[in-house]
Amino acid sequence: MDYQSVVNYLQTRGNEVLGMNYSLEAMAVLAEALDHPERRYPSVLIAGTNGKGSVAATIAAILGECGYRTGLYTSPHLVRLEERIQIDHHEISAADFAVYGTRVIETGERLVAQGKRRTLPTYFEIVTALAFLYFAERAIDFAVLEVGLGGRLDATNIVHTECAVITSVAYDHQQWLGHALESIAAEKAGIIKSGTLAVSGCSDATVRRVVASKCREHKVPLAEVDTACRFHTVVNLGGCCQFSLTTSAGVYEPVVLNLPGRHQVRNAAVAILTAEALNQRGFAISKDGILSGIRRTQWPGRIDVRRPAAPIVLDGAHNPAAITALRDFLEENYHGQSRVMIFGAMRDKDIEEMGKIIFPTMARVILTQVDNARSETVQGLAERCASLRNDFLLAATPAAAIGLAEAIPHNVLVIAGSFYLVGETYKLFEKKNLTKA
Image 1 (tube, helix red, strand yellow):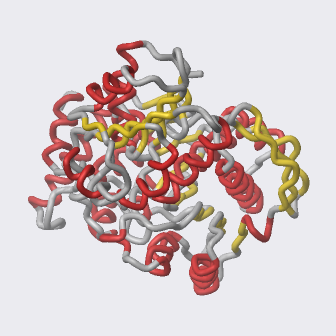
Image 2: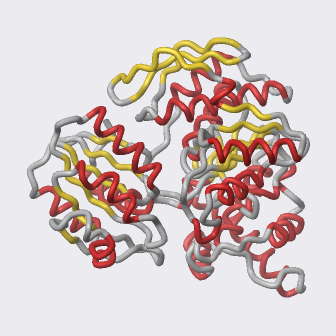
Image 3: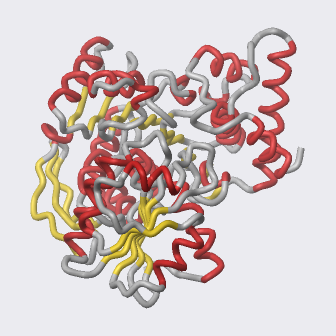
């Protein structure tokens, strides 16, 4: 199969989220048929409602600075599927994606024909197995893996990690993970297993109890940001923060972030504690490597500021906690400036709560939708948010929304509500050659 044939096959497996198979048994059968590539290298597995991608990218950067050939697996992608699978910051090529994708697809079909799997592998199972196989055959030293959804039954959770990381827990994906914060936390804490270490950036007391209980159950040492870290002199420098941090292992000073937003301070602390945990497991992670890795981390689609005539801020924020972080960033860095927002979201998200948090801070809000089976329609957005304001502008596509925004006087344009919206916008921006700040 060539690259496009593999992509087309993935699309036949249905929507990535709606078509997920919450069964580790089925994923384990696929991995076994591929000779368990995920067992050929050590790994870190990262779960969380928000921040897991940023933390994964940071840990991968730290490992790279310390001399490890590092594989990074994340989701979703913004523009290209290849973004999800990287080695030392280089995306898998389209040709390799086709080669390894074909092997996984053919293996899945054979397993069904032999009666060893009831169904063909899902979109996410295929891409996850592809990443495991690619990393193994490219002889990486270490893998940093981001959970797709939840944790306990996510396809990535067949690995046995050196360290299980939970960045945060908030309300999201309740239809799959449960409607109580305790149940959501329990699903994410399902990546914690005996014989590993755990790191948590969670701040909610209820969530912390759930995570600590899971660690006690499996006799896993736990390092928490709230108890293991002491922050000093957090300073905002042009949107990105600089701070000092003390842990039991010493003082990190200065910690210079390359990712905008004060919420990234906590994510950086999670990454530092994870690096310290890896040191405990016998991996050589230096303090200089930690600081350099944090300083060099790049992670598109998360408060990404582009500056043509006026700033454009893109953020994949897709739940109330993430939207709150975006709102706080805008208030701190663009206080008093007129802001126009383009908003689109998946219909299974808490759209009303997100709108309640951020719409009042905008001069105008343009509602749009993306080409995705889960996307809420423009009219659906307007109806669900009708009680929040009565002056929405409606645009059938992101391109049309940008056209409307360009006609409205403003200081800052904000585009947020979904990674899929940000991804479609990036494609449009590539045509307009809007460079990063």
